[in-house]
Length: 362
Image (cartoon, rainbow, N blue to C red; front, side, top):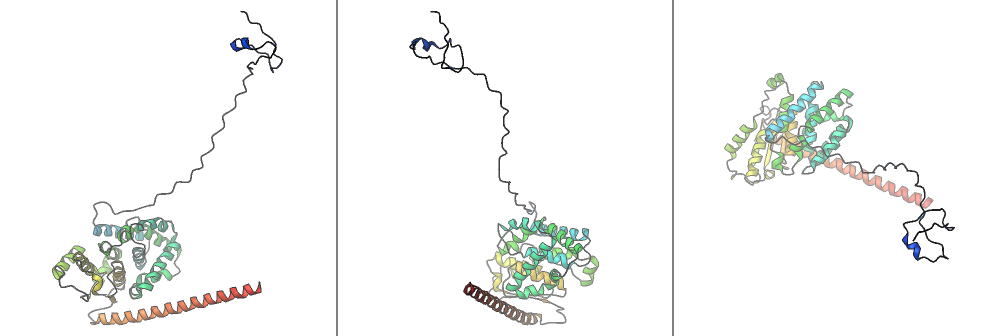
C-alpha cells in the first residue's frame, strides 16, 4: 500500500516519517505522533578542564647518613674535616672556639633517637642568627642539668653572647651546614643508647683539625688514636671484673677524653654501667677541657664526673679542686632557679590581681 503524506498540525515542523510503521495502527481521527527532526545545534567548544586542586607535595625530610662501610671513627674524621674546610673557606680566622662551639652545641642538641633526623630541615632552614639562638638554648638547657660541665665548656660557647659581625655569622652558618650535611646528627643523635653515642670522639677530631701545626707543637697536644686507647683500656681493665660502683678513673692529661671513652665502652660491653663510677679528667688547654666536658654529657658518664682545666704537674689535687668547684656551681644554679621561680610566682600573682580588679571594674 502506498503511503501518503499528511500535514500534522500538532507538530512544530513538517517532516517525513516513512520509517514509522506504527502509524498504520493509529486512528485517523487522532493526530499521529511523529518524531521531529531539528537542525543540529552549533558545535560547542569543549570547556577547559579545571585544574585539580591537589595539596602541595610535602618535601621529603633531608637525611645525611654515614656512608655505608664507614667506621664511626672515620665518619667523625670526615665530619671534622668538612667543618675545618668550611671555616677556612669562609675565612673564619683564628677564633677556633667558634666552629668548635658549633659542633659541640649541635652534638648536644637534646633530641635523640630514631626521629632525630627530623630536626635537619629546621636547622638547615634557619638563618645565622637563628642558628646562634638555637645553640644558645642548647647550652641553657644543659646549664640547668649539668651546670658544672656547662661551666667548663664556657671557652667554646661564650661567643654566642657576643654581637657577632655579619661575616662571623656567615661563618657560623657555613660551619653548621657543613657539619649537618656530613652526618653530624647521625653520629650524635640517631640513637638514645649511650654506647652508640660514644662510638667516636668527634670533639677530638674537630679540635685537632682546626688547630694549626705550630699550635699543636707549642701545646704538646697530640690526641691518642682511638685504636690505641681501646687497646690500652683492654690491657688495664681486662674483663672489668674488678670494676664496680665507686670505681675511680682519673686521666691527668685527658685531652677530650679519648681514654675515658674507651674505658666506658669496654665497661658497657661487659654489662657494667659506667654511670656508677667516678670519672675525673684534666687538661691544660681550655678548649680541650671544654671538649671533654661536652663529651661527658654526650657519652652519658653519669653524675660522678668532673673536668678540670689546669696544669696537673703544678696542681696535684685537681680532683678535690674540681669537686669544690662543682659544689659551688650547683649551689649557684639552685639559687638562680629559686629566684626565677619566685619571680615567676610573683608575676603570676600580679596578673591574677590585675584580672580580678578588671573584672570588678567591669
